[in-house]
Structures are given as C-alpha cells and as structure tokens.
Image: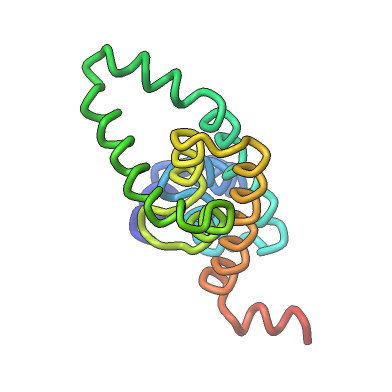
Amino acid sequence: MQHLIESIINALGGVPAEAIVFIISLFPILELRGGLIAASILGIDMWKAIPICIVGNILPIPFILLFIEKIFEILKNTKLVKLINKLEQKAEDGAQKIMKYKKWGLLLFVGIPLPGTGAWTGSLVAALFHFKLKDACLAILGGIVLATVIMCFISYGIPYLVGLFL
C-alpha cells in the first residue's frame, strides 16, 4: 500500500500536503488508513492529520448508505453491470463476517485494517443488507475511530506516540 500512496503523492506534486492526505482518505481501499500513512510520509503532525483523514473518510459514507442501491439499479442497465455485480459480491462476502454480530461486526469490519475492509465496504454492506441508518452510521463511525487508533500506531510508530505522553 505504501508504494501506491507514494505514487499518488508524487502524481499530486505541487498540491498542499494536507489536501493530498484528504484526497487519499476519500478513496475506497486507501481511506483513512492510506491518509494516515501519507500524512506520516509527508511529515504532517499526527494530531493535524487525524481530523483531515477522518473527515475525508466519513464524507462519502452518507451517500453510499442512502443512494447506493438506486445507483446500482441504474448502472445495472449499462455496460458497468459486471462492475456492479463484483461490488455486490464483495459486499456479500463481507456481510457473512458482519451479520453474525450485526453492529459490532460492522464496527470491527470497518475498524480492523485488513485488505477488503473499511468504511466504504462496510457502508456498502450496511446499505445492501438494510441496516438501520442510525446503527450503520454509529458502527461505521466507531470503526473509523478504531482504525484511526490502530493506524496511528502503524503510521507514526510507538516511539512517536510514547514521546507525546512523556
């Protein structure tokens, strides 16, 4: 993932570092996880990077939760039908892990930084499996907070974090 993030940083040369972090945090797959790695690479202070990454990661979520089913219906009548089927399959694969524990499963699915997990996929699962909007939003937000904590340890390192409190 770091190589991809470095490629994006290089491609966006001349763009302010904070804007690069925000843009990376918006993208599926990379999300907040990629944003915090980019912030670390770019030398942005962790406390400055956290709100930028969280806002970037949260911004697409309401649109996914509210409109993805309608968008999929429209796109199934186009040449993008294979992509939609692939996205729906990804949601179904993720749903099997989530549905056993419902809200807590969704929170952990979004929060634990593994390939194929995150707020985008979690939102897709919540929308396609008709989670209550409030439950989905709270679980996804909780997952983003958990991902933030984990990724701060990974991106900035334990010595950096320990030094903050000494």
